[in-house]
Length: 491
Image 1 (cartoon, helix red, strand yellow):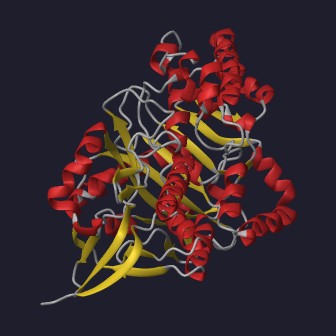
Image 2: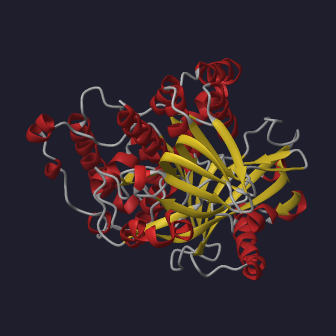
């Protein structure tokens, strides 16, 4: 049967933030853009007056102010900035308090606040790692030196929030090779197991990458940013996404929901890309296609052209699935001094899987838009090795997670309203599901993309695998770069 065919200049497959920013940037420059979203995937969960937002890392819960401002400026989203200014007037005092601590790292016998002010952070070191204090201070002094060098290596006029992109003349004066070549496993070899884990948990809390071989220069960039940058806490990801979608639609962009993609054909004639939609009697044709889905999900669409991605699929692979579990509870159960964001490990001798490591995000106290009065919503992200989960295993996994949570929240069962795993059970099989922790086969060169933004002449990729070492920052960067690259093709 002959299919109806719709024509666009650019099609974006997937509704992640990177693809959304690329789409909004292109439509803002009068390009004809279609955003195709998977109808069965829902990025947020609503239950009994609670609103939950799954996340891949803590950078999705707190955004660098420079990055936030740049996104608002790029897409002309003045209302986004205005929302934050209004919120600051109402909650100025409490916001200043929250900005003092990025999140907590909970070890079996320690709870460490990551203060942005070095003097206050030193008090935490002295209390928890007294036998290693002098070496820890040397470790951070060395990071200060590298942080200063990184600033010099940045291109003039580059975004302070974005990754290193030095100009040739700066490379001659400050070559990238002048940075230390040590990796974190080498740098931390003489430290205690507790301090090594303290640093490792911080690193994977900010990014989408699991490794004990983070370049020391990258670790410096991630661990020192608290002092170097101002942050916007308690980002409302749902509202931010909604505003970008509204901007995209207002500037002429089209949005369609689809059951799925049956096939992607990349033709040699006129270099057009054709998407055959599953369950529909029509196709989508465009000059450029932006893929915005985890790389390992895309092979099923490309058929014989899957070899375009095979090289990169071998280079970076998902190691863990991040499983969101949602809890509604009375705020009386929250221990004194517990922060809204924390990462916890229950047993240093065991792997991260099986509920041993949890990433927790508590809804902001008093915010009735996300939890009823006197209640708090808790989003818990736990790890299951890729390929080792199945629906029947989730009940056993939930038991392990709850065991860990009872360690963090004494008397939890008395104040718990519900534990909800239904969103995860429905969404985990969607090709849009984005919550993974990746590992790389080769050493990471963090001054460039891991997976290039441009796969072929008219095929682009945006997602967590472009800059897995930069978290949300990397997603925004990939979307911006792809949008700019495609705009140049029309010039």
